[in-house]
Length: 311
Length: 244
Image (cartoon, rainbow over all chains, first blue to last red; front, side):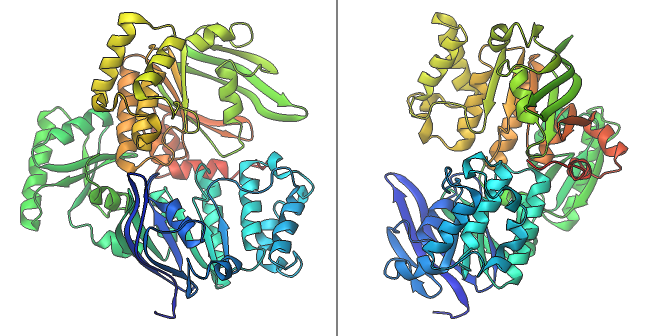
């Protein structure tokens, strides 16, 4: 086994009855890496976390964390990792400070001993330390859960959808917090359904319905997008979407905020320019006078959708 | 004709003002995006508009009914769905349609016809007898939306309807929204996906209980000299003083 890998997964399978939650997942996550599992609900992200945190046994395959086997060495792994589940799992009827003290005690340490690690995060909820955890707002619960997951100074931090349901500004702040933890040398595995967060990771795995579709750096994944991508805009966007889909040269067309992202069946550079001028003529004939078409770089969401068969 | 009208609508909890004198109107068939940071007061405002929470002061009418005195009438003329609550997972697809249709006063042939049409439009005919929990989240949310507008309400409230839904299905969901709006149903929607804010006719952004901006996405971008709605949101929400 490679010593520089903190997490190894090899051929992991997990079924729940007829549902294949994980199908043949193999991944290596390097020491000190900020690694993202990117995918919608039902991708298998939580199942993967539960296997790596020794809370669930895989049906087959091997997995290790810090060089320790998730089945045989589960006790040792539990000492060395921090886990923030997707659902708030602290004690609602204990106060903020009591929760943190509890987790510190369970791991044979004290808040004081590791305060420097959590200070940035905990300082924001410390004014409310006598409030019961159940009475905290969503954002404060999240900060408390992260503090509790960190209080024993884990080597690896597992964060299952920490930003789901969180507004865009707070999401940016959360990722800034992860950057600072990464600088402390903690390996971080984090999952998210928000594709735009992928760029904050060193490497990502795109996941869907129990399968790993692609593993690379965000830039590496974007570079595998093979087709020319066009952003098309006009004043009547909904009609434009339907007309673009009806255009014979269209391979795929999706709404992307203020523009529609269009790819063409034609892939050769020479062919593309004539298809684009054909498209301009087609849209003029449909009565559009204000269409703009520009070539753009794909986002991770474009790549994910290109990997995903039509639902 | 306005489907939602509010004038200085306010809600206080003790000495905390969750919603602070908000005034706006939403027209028939409009897709209205109701944005704001966590804790800005969106949920409280939405609860008042749905007749679930009595305002402290101010005026509001939804579908022509008063939010103080006519809350039962409001509930009959609106639809509601959220990411957290939509359908009953341990009931079958047809049972959910039957339940919610019945609650909204549909029955007999009318309900049967509506059920068939709904399943056909969503291509869910083969899933009629499937437990809702066994459906992928995206299908479930599309079904939940269709059920929420089954009784052709004047307005449907959608609270983060697409959270966690895969990118392709998220877009199909928005096509359902457009179709409902074309039928004249007003859509009042919250989301944390800023690309979805671009699909709204108009967008309001709440900061610390107040509506700090309200206009079309185009106009907001030009006012804030922003490339997209994400930049507009960041420019406004960063000014927030209060935590959640």
